[in-house]
Image 1 (cartoon, each protein chain N blue to C red):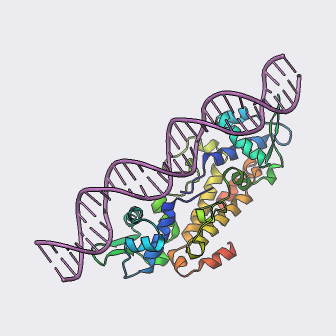
Image 2 (cartoon, rainbow over the protein chains, first blue to last red; image 1 turned 90 degrees about the horizontal axis):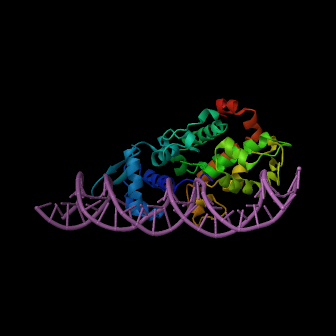
Image 3 (tube, rainbow over the protein chains, first blue to last red; image 1 turned 90 degrees about the vertical axis):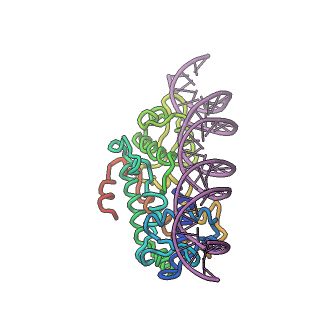
Length: 144
Length: 144
DNA sequence: ATAAACTTGACAAAATTACTAGAGTATTAT
DNA sequence: ATAATACTCTAGTAATTTTGTCAAGTTTAT
């Protein structure tokens, strides 16, 4: 349960590759495709969304590619996923896009809200930098 | 992102209704269907899974229905969802059922693992009793 | 007996996911 | 200028998952 679509997964991995080139080496889609084993065409879609979301900038022409628009310590996993998959919305009730009629009468509404906030909070604390320098190992251990 | 299927959502709401009858009033599928606005046929599937998982017991014949097999303070939301939707598995890598080839080389594996554990931990702490007595309101506020 | 209520497995419509295809635009090296 | 590189954009589509329905049972209380 609570699966993340491949778009989100690939997106994070793609951003990890782009982050490696920060601040001055553009990474091409082709290169990301090779390193992360995701098709070029699919990555185009993903990176396009991330660009429109302002997380990366593109450089066209030979020698071009993508570069992080901010430092890797300033881009959280939460931001990446938000751009690719929209806000955390455990249930339709919690999705700002759809809304729910019963809200007040629904005993579980608070539960899903709390869970969603928990998840978002966690994802906001992890940045691309954490992926780059492997500091996740500690976070995982503590289980905080 | 990170949606929960209706099966899980309805399941929790159904368990909430069953919990109301604990320890001696069996609740029929028909009654749950009315109160929670979910079709009888679909509830049959859901409650069957929960029964096989040992969370509820069924009483056949007239006057029958479903009863919690343990007190509402001893049944967590996590257990309910686990039975209906399987373990939290943000990515296929994290799913014990499928596994992942690259695991070690995958920079994000630890991230999804940590997130999954965070979610499971949270869901384990919330019980049906919390839904019954409305103690969720505080949990939500604290944001702990 | 008979009606209430659960049990089970098969099946199907709808929605979502996970892509692929192809034509177009911008930039740079020569 | 021209060719090569690389990003941009819109559709379309196959596979999968979700979200159920249906029908034919079985069990039990009265």
